[in-house]
Image 1: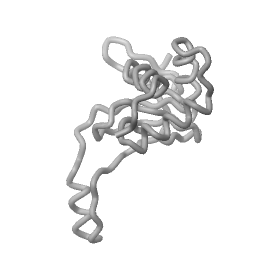
Image 2 (image 1 turned 90 degrees about the horizontal axis):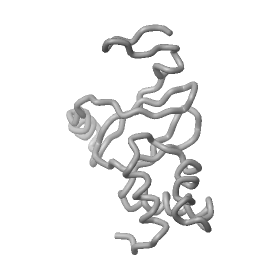
Image 3 (image 1 turned 60 degrees about the vertical axis):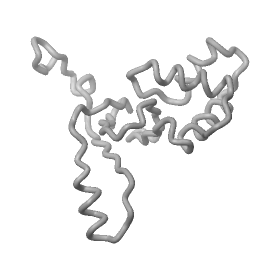
Image 4 (image 1 turned 180 degrees about the vertical axis):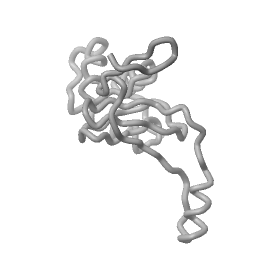
Length: 136
């Protein structure tokens, strides 16, 4: 468990209060509103510590910019290849893959992640009307 720090608590608070999957730069701008003298390097250092401590998730993206998630429960993500956005996928987690891979390889599997990639609705030029996705 990490020793508490004002900066780390502020980062976690901002991250836990958003459904988006923000970049370190976005988090920096938001935390700076509460702690004006915080530096970007401090944000990156604390994100690394929070990730290593299992308190947040780091999500690699197709755009090579990591995004962060305050929800550490196993769930799936979609990463847009064009805009770099990350979306939670509301799909049941298939833990049978962990059992199958462990059985076949002899590895000890403790968790897994799945990131689907492609184009988000916005980048496809679609919008939702009456529950259906249609081209704009």
